[in-house]
Structure formats: C-alpha cells, structure tokens
Amino acid sequence: MSTTRPYRDTERAMTDCQLYLISPLDVDGDFPQRLARAIDAGDGIVTAFQFRVKGLDQHEAARLADPLQAICAERDVAFIVNDSIALAKRLKADGVHLGQGDGDPKDAREHLGREAQIGVTCHSSKHLAMEAGERGADYVAFGAFFPSGTKETEHRPEPEILEWWSTLFEIPCVAIGGITPQNCRPLVEAGADFLAVSGAVWNADEGAAVEAFARAIRA
Image 1: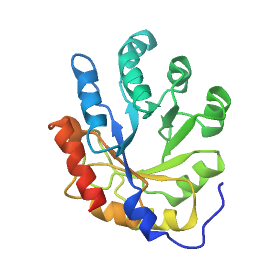
Image 2 (image 1 turned 90 degrees about the vertical axis):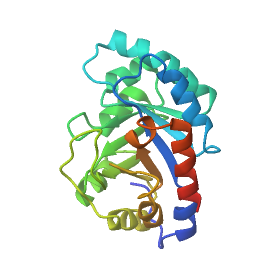
Image 3 (image 1 turned 135 degrees about the vertical axis):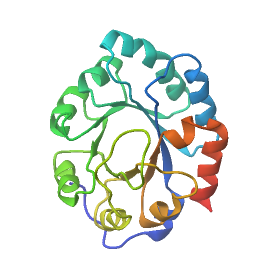
Image 4 (image 1 turned 30 degrees about the vertical axis):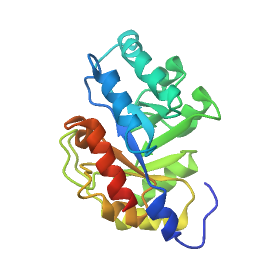
C-alpha cells in the first residue's frame, strides 16, 4: 500500500478531480467520433476511458477497440479495459478495471506489467478497498453513489467514504454510479480523484455534457 498522508489536502481534492469516461455497451457506428468529441471538450478534464463491452469474443472486441484506443492514444487519455485481463493484454491497453469477480490485482500485474493501471471495484467497502491496495491496485472505485441506469447496483456508499480514503491513502479513488453535473459536487468536495461517468455523457450531447462536468468540478 502507498504511504499515508497525515491530512486531507482539500485544495487538491477540489481542483484536481478528473473525468473517467465509461463506454456504453454499443461502441460501433459513430461512437468513435462521439468519443473524440467528448475527450476534446472540457479542456483536458477527461483523462481516462474504460472500454466496457459484454458478450463479445476477443476478435470482435479488438475490432471495436482499435479506433477507440487510437483516439485515446492521440489525446494522451488512458485506455482501460473492463473486466478482462486477457483482453487488456491482447490490446496492450493502458490498464484493466476489475470487478470483485474478475481476478486479482496481483495476477493482473503479472500479466500486464509494472506500468499497467489496475483498478478495482470496492462498492461501499473500506475493507475491500484496503485489500485492493495491498494487492497492488493503482486505484479503487466506490459506488454507486446515485441510482444508475447503466447497470444494476446494490451498494450505496455515502460521500464520506471518499473523504476517509483520500485522508489516509495516496492511491486515487474513483466515484461511480449515476453521477451527473448536477449532483457531482459533494463527491468532488469529499475527495474523489476521478468521477466515472457513462449515461450522463452518452445519453446526451457528449461535448456539452463534458463541458458541464468541467464547470461543476472547477466551480
């Protein structure tokens, strides 16, 4: 686990929060153009993108990932694969995001190398977050903080868990679940390093949505 810091840096928490875009399940058609528009909006607020598709073989997933990965690389945005260590390795992705049933961060490190960014879903559990850190995770994700139309959720943490984490540990924390420009401010103030968002961007005008997030985060 990284070293602890003795106090919560409130200024850091309120100015350095960034957007972590999560793809919709359908990334075909004009989605590459939409991704480019989203990343280009908000004056650099988007720094990570998670490729999240379900029920596809690796060949088809790789075909869909190729243009999206190129867009991210051109813009210095981390390209993270959801769930699959094997697909992340095949794509030479920047990292992988693991749910609680998707594998061990230590195994992911062995397969993907020292530079890979490995994230772990920790729901509302301090124990799971500390365990993920001990196993070598580069970030931990808490949520869902709000009702989400992207996926079913049963855990509902309070923003205080972000403050607890950011006060004690250097590993970044990600807030996820139903986050919008209108409700994100308490999460930023609590110390979220990243807001992971999907529906609030892709169910709207993606450029305008990202700009609205940037205004809310930097207010």
